[in-house]
Image 1 (tube, rainbow, N blue to C red):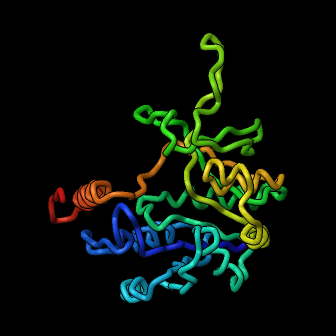
Image 2: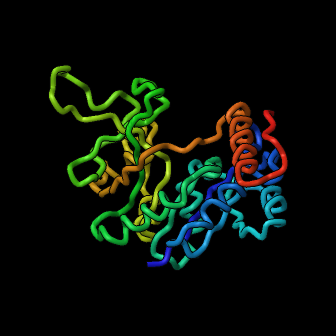
Length: 257
């Protein structure tokens, strides 16, 4: 089964304006994402779905394929669904444009999930909650899964609730990671549905899938990668990137920005 990765790239950003074009490393942030995904072995093509010609102009130097989409889309799912209408691959993966350290094996793992689980409509990823993260934080989305790693529910609330602290083997908290693989036909169907009550309540689009009785397979991974929401987080990424270059034989020492 052929797979295409679509990276929805919106220029606007409230906390970090035009962050996807930040290029302290010499490479735009979104291009770092492209280069990570190009390492996948199960991906046939990588493209960026954009809403502004300035993104196209910036990425032309790297030979990255961009597709202009409507500026009116309210979500990344809607943006990639517009692109998917003209694609032929049977699996479409949505990778966030601000995940420059996304691990290629995670993308490949999601694709493999759909290739081997014929009754799943889509797949996503989760990791055990990091020790330094607070499960009560509503900005960190939790997911609970069944015994076959199918999603039961996603919430900003602290789920599962530990009613009995003496339970010998309690369920653990899992942090949901915002990456999705869809069967192309299902993605187009999903984009045609109106928001559902639980989705509107929690402000979590993936609940629309569960409310329609459809299935989401969850890939368990060992750790979460760093998304970029603020200039401070971008500076930390630049430092890690410079440190990695130096470790690989680069001449310049890491520079904090």
